[in-house]
Amino acid sequence: MGITERRTRQKEELRTLILEEAWEIVKAEGWQALSIRKIADAIEYSVPVVYSHFENKEAILMEFTRQGFRQLNKKLKKAMTSVKDPFQQVELMAKAYRDFAFRQKEYYQIMFGLGIPACDKVNEVEEIKIMSDMFIEVIENSLTNGTNKKADKFLKFHTFWSILHGIVSIQMVGTSGHSNDMNKQILEDAVSGFIRSLREK
Amino acid sequence: MGITERRTRQKEELRTLILEEAWEIVKAEGWQALSIRKIADAIEYSVPVVYSHFENKEAILMEFTRQGFRQLNKKLKKAMTSVKDPFQQVELMAKAYRDFAFRQKEYYQIMFGLGIPACDKVNEVEEIKIMSDMFIEVIENSLTNGTNKKADKFLKFHTFWSILHGIVSIQMVGTSGHSNDMNKQILEDAVSGFIRSLREK
DNA sequence: TATTTTACCTAACACTGTTAACTTAGGTTA
DNA sequence: TAACCTAAGTTAACAGTGTTAGGTAAAATA
Image 1 (cartoon, each protein chain N blue to C red):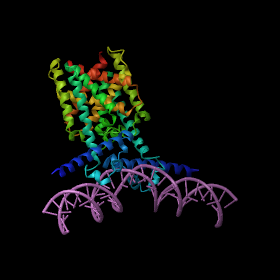
Image 2 (image 1 turned 180 degrees about the vertical axis):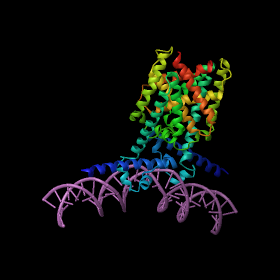
Image 3 (image 1 turned 90 degrees about the vertical axis):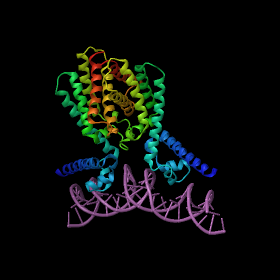
Image 4 (image 1 turned 135 degrees about the vertical axis):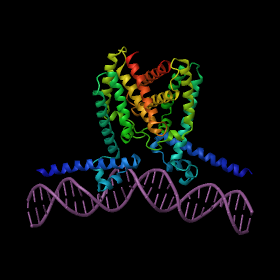
């Protein structure tokens, strides 16, 4: 009875074809350009065929999210096993993480639902400059009050902002993750570390 | 000639009405539910009237982004002027930032294009657990190798992940912002601060 | 009063995700 | 072989989206 086996094999092949062609579209035109009709066109089948392999569009995106994390995990593992010192492991894994995010932008975007539209908002909204100026001012004052006088205030500002935004957005995406108390502790932990880096070198 | 003045005043009133009603929709149903037709319905005008006040939907979203930053800036300024010590200013501004993000979730989401769909992805994708486990392992090893033995490894992991994600996503949203070199420095700065917090208390 | 401007609406275009209903080809059974 | 059934694949629709062309009617100007 090789017939049913052939059929399930062909079904699987079509499933991977859908994902491959979808990925081609995303690479060429970005996530917002991905539509079921375009996928159907690319695989040379009608639209409902796509739905016979994936419940809905969300399921396709979810599949890419998973693929993304699998690839990221591979890179992290490689970084981790390349050295023995745990501090160095942390450092190399951080670099691997960043590396993955920028080499596989499309993956990282879908993994974290990152701003698909208007990607250069930060450069267009002048109100952001006001915020930056405020932060830079207090950071500058902190540096002159501490012993780390020659640190770059712009660098420190961006570090600070990144930390803040990271904490907020990770907590926002995974709402039910932890208690509100834990979330506040994470902020305090990160901020106290940052403030120390302002105070002393 | 009060006629043209009345007309421009009415135009402005309609503009703010559009924004108000749009905001009502967002608060009630979220960003993905906001459509021009719904806005037109709410203001009791036809669709093209909306377009006579805003070039396109993107322009409406941009207006909310600006509003968001203006409100955030107000809170930051308040935190900043409430104390004199610059280190304490940094700390209070961080808290004000987080506070704004969670009290005004809708604003923060549009300001940073934050994952509008599938908000609890983090909880559904099991691959994320694998990543967490790796990070937690090296963090645990780091803590036992250092002098900060009673630190919470879960807390430290979330702090670390938040820092990483913040750096990546801030840099991704504002692509043309800085040189690649500066971006790498930001990562190194933040990570070295974090590693120190693992090594010593 | 005639003309122009402005305000506004209807209706369309080109898309999107999703699904009901139909056809047709393949394999199974009598 | 003929009749049947199942599953693959189709067309065409529904309901929604952003956006805009073209027409109408009222109001302001000449």
